[in-house]
Image (tube, rainbow, N blue to C red; front, side):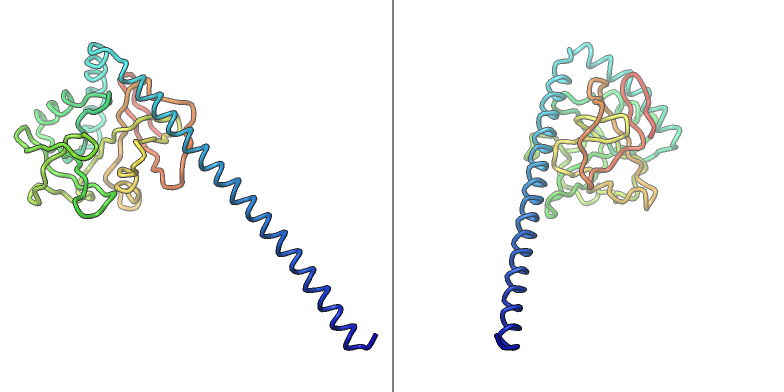
Amino acid sequence: MSTSSKLSHLNTQSDTAHLAVDDAAVGEMTDVASHAANIAIHTQENRNQLRKSIRTARKSLSETEQTQASLSASQRMLDALQAQNAQHVALYLTHDGELATPALIAALWQLGIHTYLPRLHPFNAGQLLFLHYSADTPMQVNQFGILEPKLDVRAIIPVTELDVVITPLVAFDLMGNRMGMGGGYYDRTLANWQLKGKPLPMGYAHDCQQVVSLPCEHWDVPLPFIITPSRLLTF
């Protein structure tokens, strides 16, 4: 065999070897991607099942239990807010068995603390606006069946001017991780709170919403404080 023929033969063998390696690499990458996708699916299934379980537990609380929980938690929250000297506080209206907020809102008004409610942003999907809330604020039901203030640009407050955002949640763990309803609205709102120093996020939940550990994603924002009817948790 001539030198040129030998070189051609070697190049052909080399190309075949590279193709074999490339095929193996592609196969391995496909397996990894498939495994990662399966993990993501299972994680999402776990999150959805956990949401369902916790929502069922909190909705099973009797009216008396809800009232007592609300009174106990509101006093703990008031103490925490006054310790922070908070004057502008965003919170939520109770929905789907969440820890009730009417007693807390009434107490904040008595103390002269300004309260704000979230509403879905009319133009930027996945974002929230916060509007000043008083007893005569016009309200409407949004696409999720939740009451929110009617849009009034005069009532909007920039998020960075809020002192505290009291966040609703479905579940929490003892590392301060929070699980919401899955829309990511509060995670987007609070994504940069540590860089700017405010607003300070505080979770508000029934004791039965605690779990040992939550499956978390990189965009989930952990909470430095969580208040329940029985305790104040700090992280």
